[in-house]
Image 1 (cartoon, rainbow, N blue to C red):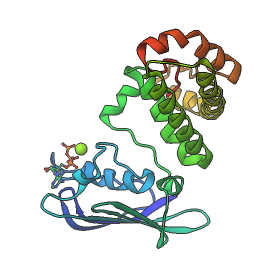
Image 2: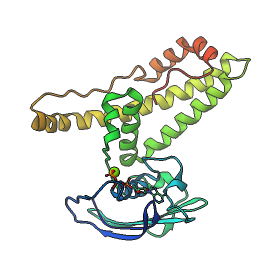
Image 3: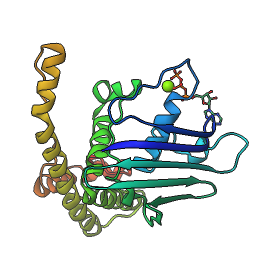
Image 4: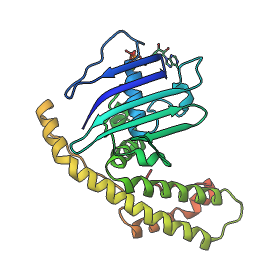
Length: 250
Ligand SMILES: Nc1ncnc2c1ncn2[C@@H]1O[C@H](COP(=O)(O)OP(=O)(O)OP(=O)(O)O)[C@@H](O)[C@H]1O
Ligand SMILES: [Mg+2]
C-alpha cells in the first residue's frame, strides 16, 4: 500500500497543508521544530486512531483553534481508500465517508511501522515496551487481536478493582482468573505467531546490515491457559496484599 495524499488543517503547527507523496521513498527534511514529526503523527493518527506522542488528542489541535481535520488518501493492491479524522470536543473518524463507530475499525487500513529515536526503548527498556510494540503491529494485521486484548484489559481492571477491596472471595477471583487465562492464551498465540513469521526476515536483514547474527524469540510464562492459571493461583496471596494482578502479559 502507499499513501497518496495528506491534507491537514489546524494540526500542530500547520494551518492548511496538502502533501502529495511518492509511491516509493519520501524524505521530509528541514530545520528543527519545522513540523516533520507532526506529519508522521498525522499519518499515525489515521492508521491507529491515536498519537504516538500524546494521550491528549486536543494537544494536536493548532493552538488557538478548536478543531483539527486530517485526511489521507491511500491506495492498496485491490482498492483505494480515504480516511478523515476530526478532532474537536470529540473525535470522529470516517472511512470512505462512512462514520466509524469504533476506532478499532480503523486498524488495518493504513499499515504502518514507526521507528523514532524513542523507540530504541524496544531494545533498551523492559518487556512492556516490546509488548506494546508487538501489540501495535499485530492489531493492524489481525482485527480480532485488538478485541481480545481489550477484553483482557477489562478483566485485569475488574480483577484489580476487586483486589483493592478488603474482603475477597476466592471463588470470585477464580472466575476472573479463568477469563484472564483464556484471553492470555489467545494473546500469546497471536504474538508468538507474529514473531515466528518475522524472525527469519529480521535475521536476514540484520545480517545484511551488520554481518552479525540476531535471534528473536517470544519468551512468556503464560503460554497456555493451564500455565497462566497456575501462575495466577501462585501469586494470589501477593496480589491480595498488593491490590493488583502481578501475572500479566501486557
Ligand atoms: N498544538 C500546537 N499548535 C501549534 N504549534 C504546535 C503545536 N504542537 C506543536 N507545535 C509546534 O510544532 C513544532 C514541532 O514540530 P515537530 O515536532 O514536527 O518538529 P520537527 O520538524 O520534527 O523537529 P526536529 O527536527 O527537532 O525533530 C514546534 O514549532 C511546536 O511549537
Ligand atoms: Mg522531529
